[in-house]
Image 1 (cartoon, one colour):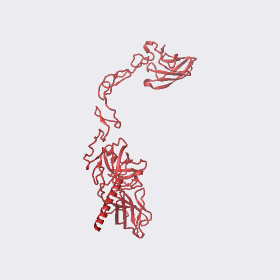
Image 2 (cartoon, rainbow, N blue to C red):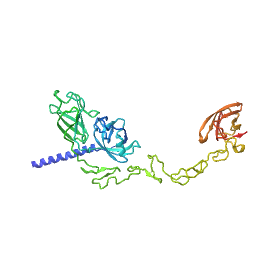
Image 3 (cartoon, rainbow, N blue to C red):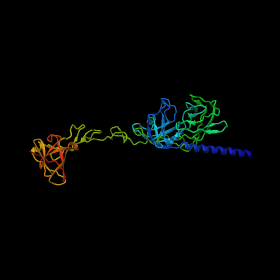
Length: 438
């Protein structure tokens, strides 16, 4: 009876541990959603907010938004990022203060795996994952550390470390507060005996509540110290709810692999830009087209050629491209494109054209005399605009000759450059295409 009770207690403890571990897995593997951007990165330095040393070729790292950075608790974490083009695992080495929750600022090399850098930003989903390296946890003491002041950094942890404690002279574990720059700071040092530094016993707690005891860790002023230990891999449920399973959410957004019976990325396809579930397509001219490719979909021009450059001019004729025709350039006195008449001395052999006036009849009369333009009206002229080719509106000066005659100083000789004039008086506004030739 006693043996059965012991077995039951052990079994209950193991079940409790598994359930607790799974709960902590859920915390760590939570999916986050936001936007990905890119910046220069901090490869070849310790310049990121996490103060982690990166080799010059260690370009797969990111700056985490301020909220998820969580006072540096996510420093050194490995995250799996899904984007439109693919997925990548990168290390958190920096902080992005201006990024919104869920957003990540990446190196160009990291961003280019999940999207095209020509876009600048891309919708992403990401989660914390175990770091894939096989290295052991290392301790680094900050430059200047001593028996009176000490700062400790944890490196190469498989899972992010959320808590660091040291064992004091009484055998109790004392929490060491973490700083934004990713060091655990003991402002009065770690040594009760100030005549020496170390060795120390540390207790590490990961974000999934795993605990490691690191005994007899020596003090090294400049070098990293290997602890000889690493957090063990956790048995977590995968997206198919299999404990220890290998199924993952793929680039199609589907749980695949493992025991799902679905091959990864088999439920969707890449578009011509290489984007999963993308909307870009190859047009009839062989170009990849959508709103982000900067290409206009190919079509037939007015000459019936795919991707041709021919177009319909203002006279209604198909010109340019391979038509061998040029667009009409002249304006008939009545204002019709493609006519043979011109404003000026050659207007229909000096025949008066029709008058268009707004908003009433009685528009001022324009007269061409010796290549100069005159305006006869009983109303006071306050402004005249010359409407140039293609609709450009340019103000022109007007000189009053006598009580009812004004001389208009056009910007171009109207006999060479077809124009319409807009005339404003105190009473009305007129658009005039009339021209008497004398």
